[in-house]
Amino acid sequence: MESLDPVSPLEQALHAARALVLADLIAGEVAHADVVSLVEDSVAERRWWVEQWPDGMAYLAGLVAQDVQDALLERYGRWPLCPVCGSGDPHALDVEPELGPDPHWVCHKAGVKVAAVGLLGSATGGTTSS
Image (cartoon, rainbow, N blue to C red):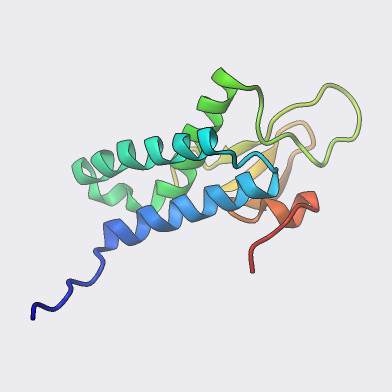
């Protein structure tokens, strides 16, 4: 009987990025099947990207979040909406750093970090996975 190979660091990073973005989508109650497929599309594209540039593995969560945010904007509108600013036009949060580890959702209008990618539910009062 063959032993199973351990999961590669690349697969671990891809699964972690997928889980973090899905947690934010669930918190915003937008994790519908067609939206989840946007996450899967991004993960597949980012797998190729990291195979070309292995040093980018630490940036996967922020990049997948940005990919999904961009795809949602094209199809549905802004996501995630800022939970900090109670007045004015609704606006989306941005991921910072754009290319770096430890990505956060940030409101540029208020100039604040709202939550780490994957922890948006704690900032919006939505559901969080435990």
